[in-house]
Image 1 (spheres, one colour):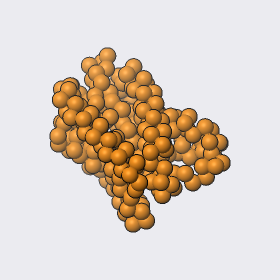
Image 2: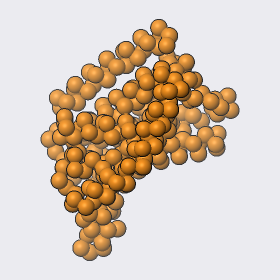
Image 3: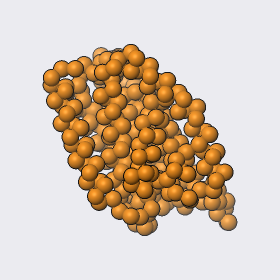
Length: 257
């Protein structure tokens, strides 16, 4: 790693630490979009946890392969995890009395693929449940599936599709991060609707209601997340080009601008 890249990473980690400390200090004590502890019936908790297992297994092997190939990727991998932790810990009160927040998983999905992000997201959700009472241990499977699996998969698919269509890279990153964020909340709404279907209209009506709860705040937050992700990638392209090349980010760069 070059001295310039090392200095950049040190400054970035210092900034992330400061923001994390701030988020710990000001996090509101209201329900967050992570499904809270005890909210889902036991059977649903177990089912969502089982559904996560193959994705987590794939993520473990993906990270191991990445690090075996290039140990320097650990810095970017850790930064992606820190980015997820910081911005998904900043809970924004919504007009409905609940909270919304960004997810931050689009960055990792773009750099390392969705499999690796499943592990990063699981670690983040586990720490948030223990340290911030943000989400829960019984609902860890459901939250992992929506935020660390479904969202990153869509982000990666959107970015890959845009790349094939020769869409501008900045626009591709924005769309991938923003749509991945929104998709996370769509999946969470479906999870809640399956557990608590409406007496009139069933699961579909319930899902629409849950989506309506978070839409007023989540749509602008998704836009903000897309912009932040673009800014982070621009900074990495400026100060950490060697590391990005080593993980394959610049592959086909000449034909994709």
